[in-house]
Length: 104
Image (cartoon, rainbow, N blue to C red; front, side):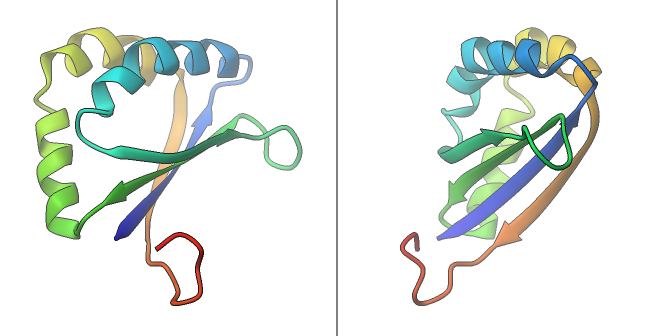
């Protein structure tokens, strides 16, 4: 399995609004294309960050599913216009499980 860790920095004061919008609108849409492993937000350290991990079968699987998501009319018309203006920056890392990792 391949795991993508995405870290989003949200504009100050917008984290609760972003979380609500993602839970109600974004998650049902993106869940058609990727499996959510975990979702967190920061309270200590660098603030206003959301960290989430998604599982894919392969890099090709990720590419196909992300391309499909980026063409999904619900994603483009109902999630993106509200969510993207709340973002300051985003980072994506592909992670590979070590042999001894409980999640593989």
